[in-house]
Length: 65
Image (cartoon, rainbow, N blue to C red; front, side):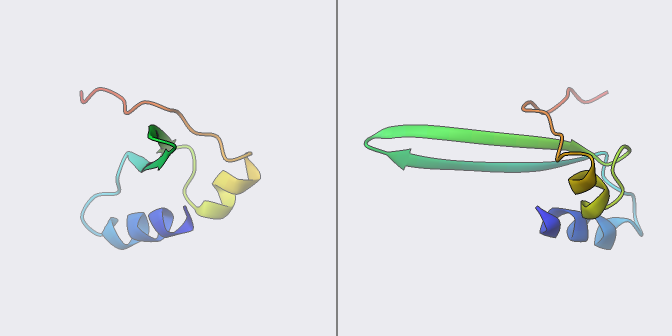
């Protein structure tokens, strides 16, 4: 997850992302499990800030407005 925050900082010269999204999936015994973690960049400006806040994240990508 720290890599997502690093990437966000690298892109901030153009426009800082509103959300960071981490998606993973695995297959065990023929069953696929997906995991989505959505982090609001406005609330947490660094990995450390997010970690100190208890690694709070949503499970769904918000609608584009």
